[in-house]
Length: 101
Image 1 (cartoon, rainbow, N blue to C red):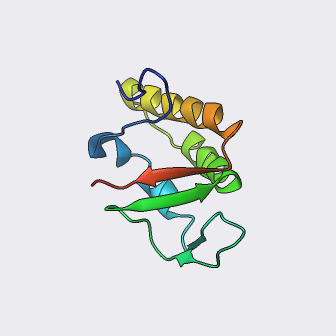
Image 2: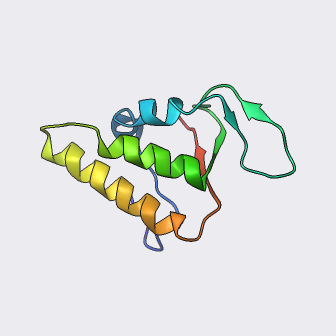
């Protein structure tokens, strides 16, 4: 449902992203993951681009893994999201989360 065929990107409707948005917001303020920039983003941008370095993504994944739920559908969503992140972080220096909320 969320993972595209090539698994290069993932679309997460707000109905589902609401379960993990706090974990993404919790790492702000956040320096952009480029060596040649000192830009710091103060908040998660629900309308634009959010750049998360590899190490920050690992931290977010750890937070997502600690989310407790009794809903099997939410649990599956969380596990699928973690799996997707792990598959990308093997080679990605950073991940861009586009806010379209």
